[in-house]
Image 1: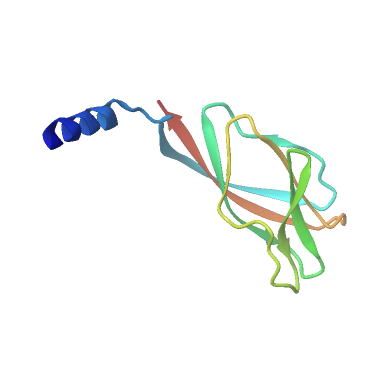
Image 2: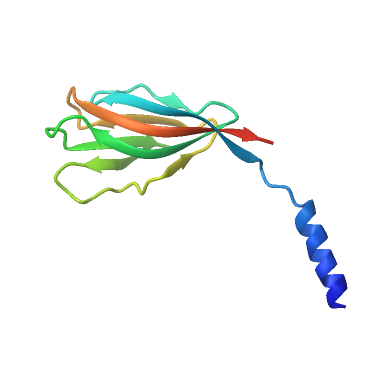
Length: 118
């Protein structure tokens, strides 16, 4: 009986397919300004892994990501508060906007892009 159950589970696990594999494509370092309102969209058949966000001056107070209508604090100066736990994954077709504290200064977001291989 144990052998039949073991064979069943091995067969079942081999027959189950995932959604695909991820293959490294490129590193994207995208700059943004504090007044940025330009959304970016993850291309079809790609997945983005946001690794980090850096502010370009000490006068910036924060950087944010607008995702599904919600603002996420990505980096905050002079504070240990980082509300986004990196890495942050974005699915194909996801649209986000990166911005800062409203001034002309901004920062840099580091993203790893993967291809989805069926």
